[in-house]
Image (tube, rainbow, N blue to C red; front, side, top):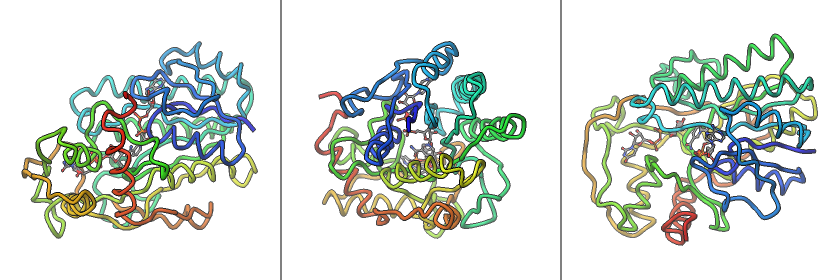
Length: 331
Ligand SMILES: NC(=O)c1ccc[n+]([C@@H]2O[C@H](COP(=O)([O-])OP(=O)(O)OC[C@H]3O[C@@H](n4cnc5c(N)ncnc54)[C@H](O)[C@@H]3O)[C@@H](O)[C@H]2O)c1
Ligand SMILES: O=c1ccn([C@@H]2O[C@H](COP(=O)(O)OP(=O)(O)O[C@H]3O[C@H](CO)[C@@H](O)[C@H](O)[C@H]3O)[C@@H](O)[C@H]2O)c(=O)[nH]1
């Protein structure tokens, strides 16, 4: 079985490519390398250096590969940046996804699609943990682009029977247990990645964005999931679609418990053995106080069982990757 991984040279995509190969799939990647890295891909994986905003490139790749399934990771991904550059986010994430759905439809085949959505679609909710049927009230442009893409996928399913699984990830972190691939985002904004870079002396201090949230220690709470566990969730999702176990499903991917910004920074201090300098700052626009998954559905229906559930493991592997690759994929 062949899987086309769109955005497969990125952080989560490259871990998923590996897990798909390990599970016996043939894999090709389509990526414009705007934030991904060819070096993150295993030798022998075919890379179409193409752009979702160039529909003819999608059509060509789908025709050449004759994929049995598509996984769609490609997006701009930063909550804060999306509030400053909204149109770039709508163009890349919404128009890009529309082009992909259209190209799949034009093949005339019902190619199953797994889509990377996000906890950011929920916004502030009363429910903690958050079930999949909670109302979707994204508070950032980034979250809106993901909700709009989910809407397009539902409509394509209703109209043409497009099979899909939407995975709403909570906060992804960690690196491969082998320590050879990991997070290398050029516009670094993620908490654990930034803390590791601060520990390496590449940044002077950690900012704590918002200390007056309605949470026990006043900082935001997030549900962290290890990137390799998330990659395994994609392998399960593709398998369920190809087996015909379902043709329309939406799952949260998280662990079901959250850590505050302060708790995460305390764990980083412990793992790296240094107390990082911290500065309290204003809230970051678009950040909901608390995002914690009700992750029971994916466990029950797909048999998802995280292998790295401890925050210490996630931070430890992230630190190993950054310590050994201080310049990411640029050696
Ligand atoms: N990292 C997280 O914590 C997190 C959490 C929830 C959801 N997600 C979602 O998961 C997906 C992957 O995230 P990631 O952290 O691996 O990000 P990433 O930036 O590392 O990967 C995205 C990949 O998509 C490619 N890409 C972007 N726009 C493209 C386009 N127009 N055409 C072709 N390729 C394009 C990039 O080059 C990159 O390789 C995204 O859709 C993101 O919204 C990420
Ligand atoms: O230097 C920093 C960086 C982050 N934070 C805070 O740490 C928390 C987590 O932030 P971050 O690591 O940037 O992740 P999120 O903004 O929660 O967003 C991530 O997680 C979402 C799902 O919850 C995904 O949709 C997004 O793509 C992904 O960027 C937030 O409260 C931030 O305000 C700080 O206090 N200081």
